[in-house]
Every structure is written in C-alpha cells, then in structure tokens.
Image 1 (cartoon, rainbow, N blue to C red):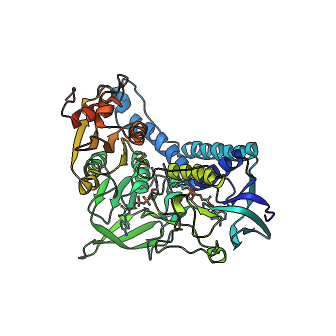
Image 2: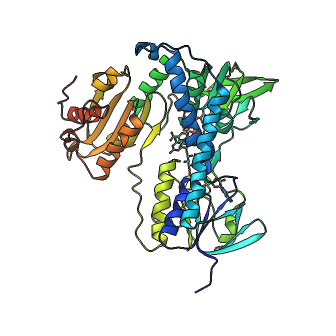
Length: 463
Ligand code: FAD
Ligand code: NAI
C-alpha cells in the first residue's frame, strides 16, 4: 500500500468539513483539514448561521422593547440602540465558536493545513508551496453568494449577506433582492432596528420550497410587521451614486420598468458551490450543470478515494445537512456504514415567529397519493397565547391509508426547536396517531404538534 501523509484529508472546514475531520480522527484515522480562512468553521460560523443568529437574537430584544411587547408584560423601558455593541457581541460569538473548532481540532489531533487547497492528482493536494498526499480526500468547500448579473457588490451600498451582517448604521431604506431565507432573516434584523424594508421577489410568493400555506401565512405575518413585498418582480439593474442606489424593476412576466430608491441593497438570490481553483480536472472530476459535484449515496464521487459533502453537492444548503454528511462520510471511509436520510432534513427560517418544516409539502405529498391534513393554530395553544405570540399554526400531512407522517410544517416562535420532535417522529416512521397519543408537557408550544396530529384524525381539543 502506498505510504500517504494522511489517511484522510478534508478540503474546507465548514460544518461539513470540520465535523468529517473530527469524526475521522475519532475513528483512528490520521486526519488533516485544509482551510484558507483565518478561522475555522466555514461560512456557517464565520459569516452565516452564527453571526446572523447573533443579530437576529439581539434585534428581537430591541424590537420587543420598542414595539410595545415589553410594555404588555409590565416592563417599562426606553430602548436606545448601541449598534457597535450589538456588532461586538456578534463578533464575540463568532470568535468563541470558531476558536472552539480550533480547540476541538487540537483535542482530536486533526492537523489544520492553512491555505487554499487544489488537486495535483487524485491522492495529492497542494496547499501553498507544499503538497500532501492522502488515501481519502473529502471535498467540503461549501458555497458562496450567487451574483446578480450586472449588479456589483461593493459591501457599502450594495451588499451580500456578509456585508448585511455588519452595516455600520441602520439604513433608512433597505431593499432586499430575493425573498428567500437570507432576505427574510437579515431583512427582519434591519427592520427591527428601524429600517424601512422592501423585498423584491421574482416568484409570486416568498420562501420557495416551503409548504404553500406556510408561504402565504408567512408573507402575511411579515407584511403585518412592516416589510413591504414586491412579488413577481425582477430587478434588472442597480445603479449607485454616492451613498444611494436606484433599482430598476420589471414585472417577472415582462412589462413596464419602474424604479426604486434605496440607501442599501441586499443581494440574496441564492448560493452556488465553491469549486473554482480546486483543479478538479487533475483528479479526474468534473461538476454538473449547476456547478455541483455529483455523488453516490455513500458520498463517493466518480473517482475512488474522493468524496464530497455539504453545499458543494446537490441538496439543500444547510449546516445540519452538511454536518450529518460529515459524520456519515467519515464512517464510510472508516469501513462503517454512514447514512443520511435526505427525506427527513428540517429547514428553519429564524425570523419572529420562526418558520420550520420537515418532509413533504402538502403539494408534493398530494402528487404522490391521497393525504390527510391536520392543522392547529398557535392562537389555540395556551403557552403561545400567554406569551402574546398568537401568530402561526402547525400542520401535519399524513398518508391517508397508512397514517404515516409525510410532512410537518409550523410557524411558531420556537418552531425551529419544535420541528426536532417532528423529524424524530418521521425518522422512526411515526403515524399521526403515534404523535397524538404521545404525552406532551403542558404548557408548551409543542402541544400544538400533538393537537395538529389529533386534528389529522378530526379530534383536536382546544379549537
Ligand atoms: P462552508 O461552511 O461554506 O465551508 C466551506 C469552507 O471551505 C469555507 O470556510 C471556505 O473558506 C473553505 N474553502 C473553500 N474552498 C477551499 C479551498 N480550495 N481550500 C481551502 N479551503 C477552502 N444553514 C443552516 O442550516 N442554518 C442557518 O441558520 C444558516 N444560516 C445562514 C446564514 C447565512 C447568512 C448564510 C450565508 C448561510 C447560512 N446557512 C445556514 C447555510 C450554511 O452556512 C451552509 O449550508 C453551511 O455552511 C455549509 O457547510 P459546508 O461545510 O458545506 O461549507
Ligand atoms: P434562497 O434560495 O433561499 O432564496 C433566493 C430567492 O431569490 C428565491 O426566492 C428566488 O426566487 C429569488 N430570486 C432569484 N433571483 C432573483 C431576482 N433576480 N430577483 C428577485 N428575486 C430573485 O437563497 P438565499 O436567501 O440567498 O440563501 C442561500 C442559501 O443559504 C439558502 O438556500 C439556504 O439554504 C441557506 N441559508 C439557510 C438559512 C437557514 O437555514 N436558516 C439562513 C440563511 C441561508
């Protein structure tokens, strides 16, 4: 057998790569991870999940203090925004968590190879002026922002998600291009901090991929909160003069152009896989039409010994999906059986309230066969009502014959936490009856899941 520098070499230290590296090392494999950023943790920890949640969390409190929610609870305050301090706590969260990965690498003896990695051949990767060989190589290079043709991101007036996380002042008018997850989360942050927010979405509804009713209801809730939507509208150009931008808009179906003035524009129209500069061809690999690396169910590419996971492969671009794939691929390399059930991957939008779902939408489930649907409004949930959080509902879609749960969708303040039980139930092949007859603690928002399951069978109590 050839003598390699490492058993496993991972390219990229995002949630896919760092988890794969740690798991491989835990399984006794000599492991290295190549990362070109100054800190480990990838998009998620540096400029994605973590900093966005730090701003979402802080802005939620500011909003609650400003919009009368605290007053309703008998707390009198006159809030004042200290944006610099808010950014400070964001940076602190990032520093602590990225530092945590560096600690875990040391603890598990994963070697961090600092620099950009590119293939020399199927078992050799160049990093700076050095080359390293490995028996198995995992590509976990993640994704970056999809540019909008003709629109230049200057990170001052026209920003991407990274720029939108660190604006030095609250814009008067923020225009968000794209009513997807980033647009809604970061649009919510700046609306809460005082910006007027307009969201321009190409499709006729926000949040593509989510259940139809959930999309409609979310739109209503965001409108009520003050976000303005221009649906079925495309942005055809953005011109910047000084610190102002003018957007040119057209109906998606074509028609007369209009303009919109903004002092900040967030481009959030999706992300694309990172493969530039990897020299995939030298390893005998290519990308598909969408720029992704195709894999089989064990995360193996078409070249033996090269594997790929996370945002760089087809599937939802989510940190927890990347993490689970990281564990599974390491286990497969170590000769175990690593599996990810891609049918049960929850999605969460961390707005107020949160929006979450797992499994099939009602539309997709109906295409496959007959279904039964149960719904329960959060307004009927005692805890949500007591907390003055009546918006939203839980919806459970079950197979009409077998009663097996096919999808669960919810809008509720802690929907991201609630969806975990739905994912677990689906992973265990639960029926709606199983959920309906599981004792849920009272008073919790999660009781709404039990009641929605009861409603599948026509029997919710509190409605
Ligand atoms: P990444 O996290 O993108 O990591 C890849 C790493 O590889 C990067 O650090 C990059 O520098 C490095 N790299 C790339 N090429 C090379 C190379 N040639 N050599 C060396 N290093 C290289 N997902 C969620 O599930 N929940 C959320 O709340 C959430 N919030 C988000 C908020 C924002 C603003 C954004 C932008 C994304 C968010 N995501 C969220 C998505 C999530 O960040 C990604 O799905 C996740 O980071 C993908 O992990 P990954 O390991 O595949 O790649
Ligand atoms: P997205 O794919 O969620 O949404 C992009 C939206 O832009 C879509 O609704 C699309 O129809 C619209 N769009 C595309 N082109 C347009 C145009 N020219 N004009 C107007 N609208 C246009 O992408 P987003 O929000 O950029 O996020 C990227 C990825 O990051 C997501 O797919 C998600 O997987 C991940 N993410 C996950 C989060 C979470 O899990 N909470 C948070 C943030 C990001």
